[in-house]
Length: 88
Image 1 (cartoon, rainbow, N blue to C red):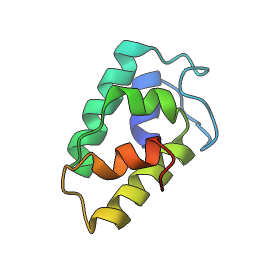
Image 2 (cartoon, rainbow, N blue to C red):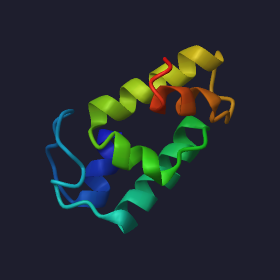
Image 3 (cartoon, helix red, strand yellow):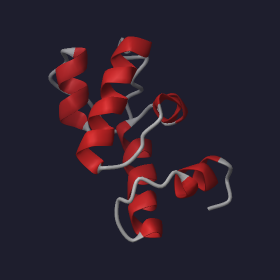
């Protein structure tokens, strides 16, 4: 995640608690990140998730939770939606 952010934002050092949008990210760059993460982790990754979880730490937690809950990356949005709704 950090490597993609560094590439897209053109910043060498990014901390796990840095906010994507505060670092200069915007919707077009976020779309690139979302597409890249979808391919890398083999899951559907809506652009809205980057807006809800704008730090590397929060994104990683959400992806790991999805991986754990689904038993792998199966492209299901159910776990991500439950996470968003505070159900898990």
